[in-house]
Length: 242
Image 1: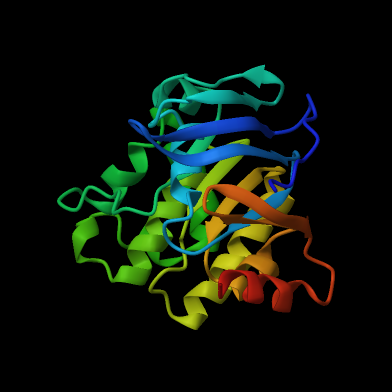
Image 2: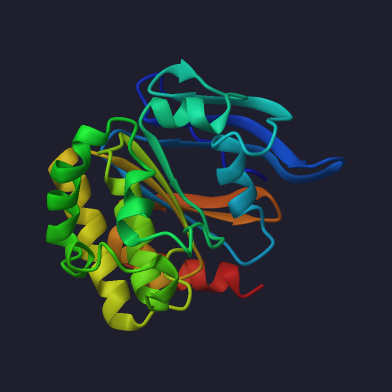
C-alpha cells in the first residue's frame, strides 16, 4: 500500500499521485510526497526502485503520465527543464553531468543566467569547497571522482536555488567527503532556506542530513516519517534488504 502524504499548497515540492516511466513501462506508481520550504527530505531505496525516475519526472526530463507536481504552489508538471531552472530549481543527476573538457570555471558559469552573479556565487561555494576557487582553469575531467561530485553540488548551489534535487551524490565517495557533504548541505539549508530532495541508498548519510525520509520500493512509497525516531535506521535497513 502506498503511504499517502498530505499535499500542502505552500510546499516547496508537492507530488500527488505521480505515475511515470519509460514508454509503456510504468516505474513510478501513484506516489505522493511533499518537501516543505527549508526541509531536507531523503528518498531511500535500492537500485531499480524508481528513485531517479521520480526526480527526472519532477525535473521534466520524463513525461508525467499521471498525477500532479507543484513547486511552491505552482503546477509545474510537464514543464521543460530549462523553465524549471528559471524558477530556481536545481538538479544534480546521478549520471556524469560535468563537461569534462571544459574548465571548472566554465562548468560553474553554465549554471548562471546572469553572468554578473559569478563572483558572488564563487565566494559562497568557496567557503564550502575551498579547492574550487584554486582550480578554476583546470579541466573538470582531470579532477578526482570526489572533487567532481563536489563540483556538481557547487554548480547547483551557484544560483542559490529554492529547491535542489540531488541524486545519489555519495556513490563512490570516501567517508571524509561524505561527512563534508553532510556539513555543506545542512549549512546551505541553514543559510539560504533551500529545500532539498535527496535520493540515496546510503542510509547513514541520509539520516545524518535529512529531516524526514521515505522509502521507495517497486515504484511505491512504503514508509515515511521523521528521522529522529531511534529505530528508523534499523527499520529502513530491514526494508532495503528485502
